Image (cartoon, rainbow, N blue to C red; front, side):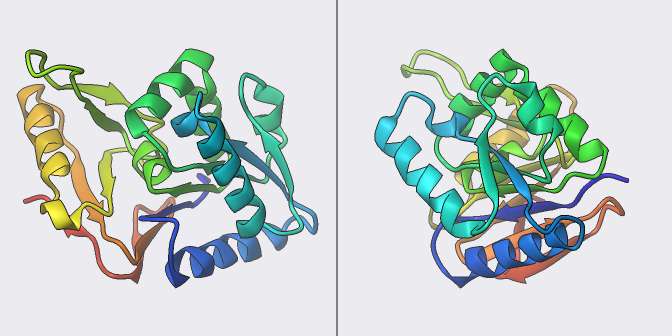
Length: 210
């Protein structure tokens, strides 16, 4: 049975803390001293971002052994939970694909390991995101994500922009004939997905692209 996925919009507020507490409780039912495999791919190359995200992981999962995935599949294979940090989702998707860690995480989820994503990490647990051009002359395209929550595309804390990027993703998906459910997780919100295909809403409810 596939493991649950915890998707949190942002790294601030009580929703993140309470959702992490739920994930810890679920893991500790099986393991007294869990191992968390963490990927900081969305902040790869950013030393300050890496430091910030690694400190956050320790805070969210006190008492757990935190191991960084990088290019080591064995870290994922022995994990009780996989954590995907915030940062730049497009960069993160490319780094994970290059190392092969996206497939390792999918396989871990398929055998029952929970996954936990915050902000960009939540986006990466879906199927696709957008690869924005570096200049105005280029065109946006789709970049494949980890795809733990198959058939879904997520955005996080973009309610102030009326979910413009998620709407742009919907347009790109339609042009390629790809069907997906598109959900925006607002600030102060989280989703807990189970293998039954159901979502539990924590905090503010998600926005759904029509």
